[in-house]
Image (cartoon, rainbow, N blue to C red):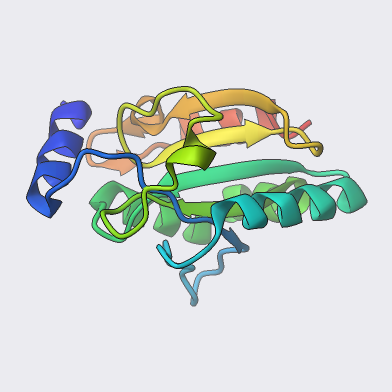
Length: 159
């Protein structure tokens, strides 16, 4: 069902390519970091590796776009769920990677497993090596992301 919804969203915006934008982000309740097609995903990941190495954290690539309702829901969950927000702040460097017609960033996304729906999360170690690819549909219950699924996911891969 999520795959169909994603395909319909992509059809509505006129593409089914793999756009990417990356933006290092620490989300907060009051300020949502947007997916920005003008960002250089490769440079953002490189910067995240430097920071993650220094701070001994994992890297969470959050792939999605401003067109994606589920991406906004996940941003809201990360910002408003206190436990998730704390885990992200303490254990991860978050990099937002845009997927939109304006910027497909095929070269960056080609390094990782195929994405079947958005948002999609990739967990990297502090050196940038892929640890896990996560379809966020598995972290949902009904019309929302489920804390009973998201929190264990974040804890499991926090290192």
